[in-house]
View 1 (cartoon, rainbow, N blue to C red):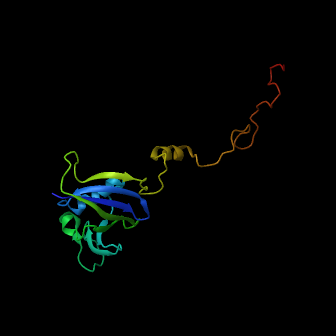
View 2: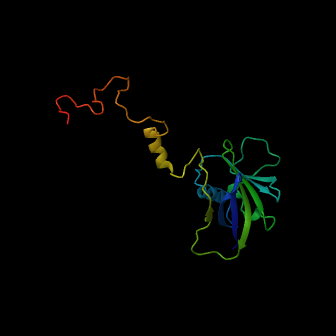
View 3: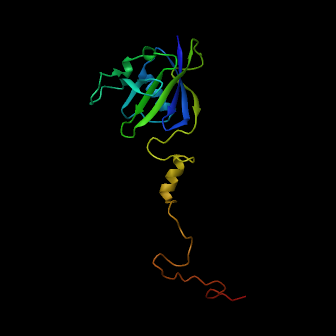
Length: 188
């Protein structure tokens, strides 16, 4: 049984990629779910693959389902199409588009074909991770989501001037001035 290794690049940044290994008999839905898991995306949106060539031109569509749009030819359905059936050359390429509103686009390139399965790996699987994945719904800092929650809760983005001796509406709180003794205290 052939094991296919695809390098899955983020279209905007080739330094961010995931290497995914999958059996040639598995289908495109398996590949779709593996890519989402590798990039830590949810599985709530529309998706499609396109068979591609060396110039990244979009060819035959392999879709999650048939969407309400015009097709040049009816799409193949991911769950019914094995990956091996769409491999046309040793460096086969695919374009994967996810969430048509955000338009996440990934470039897939076949980088290795192996005849031996690794018994320690459950296929499909992510074999290599390079670079920090983008946040699916916005910015994701290096500190992670927990810091964003704290930042929002305590409004850490707002610039503050520090602590003053006056109340919010400018009234004097009756604190002694520097060097002055408070009532009932002796000055030393």
